[in-house]
Image (cartoon, rainbow, N blue to C red; front, side, top):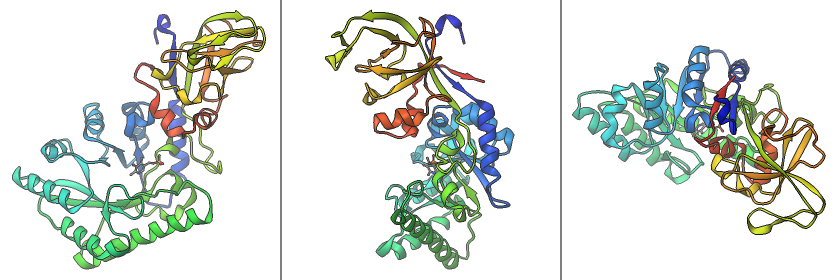
Length: 375
Ligand SMILES: *Cc1c(COP(=O)(O)O)cnc(C)c1O
């Protein structure tokens, strides 16, 4: 990075991505495929760089949320199969096929559209069927009274011309949460998923090559759900292994610098809204990071950042491009010093908890303005 621009940056530890990939892989049953989730710019880590690493390491599949994200990878030279988890408009079926991209099919209406379009251009679109087993988001509705209709619709979808159904998947909503009720819910989702697969295979004398459902929570907590492929996202980036069983390492460190330092007497109001007032002679630093860089404004006044000789409490409202932190007594910190927002010394959970959110949101929120520096 250009030293003149030293403001805020995100260090990405590529060795840790490799380490996490291998550590997760080592836990999988023999023959189980690995799909790396690289949507949302690989949770802020840089989709192309992360995909290159996963391809080198031997990942079997990658997944993104939309066509733009898939094309970025293909145009960057990624050869690994790519699954689009979200919807793609029928006008782009040709682009999907030409770029060898696998499309999720979430209902019969979409299956019909994709089929018509593929037939019209005389080509075949590779697809995975998505089953809604209780997330109540995308997917063929198959729960309870919808079972028969859901199965019948999937049977129709997999037999349409112009579509080659390679896989089938579902998504868990509470596999990462503790408690008996969450365990029962997840296992009932898994049970419904496997029941739907059997019903479709029996009805259609058809075999799904790749059955998959395990997100990060399930990879850690429900190894029995691995089936033919797992789909970890957060785990890959070093979070979500709540039991620490996999020994994963965080892959991002968000760093800013001190722009200026001022001394304020007791009783000085700091930042927008005057929500913070000094109660002592305060050595206040202005940090070159704000909510436009991805720092959650909801964490204002509720967290501390790591500096060389300790932790600096953040004070007052976080602004668009900067925020303030109390550097009183932190003698090693000067103008230009590095401040770790989250990373090795300051867990991302300190910031996400303060903001009332989850690490996922913080990682994705690190904005385009923040250069990624690969180590
Ligand atoms: C985002 C996503 C994942 C990955 O979730 P993590 O909790 O990050 O492992 C897996 N599957 C689908 C369908 C997703 O949308």
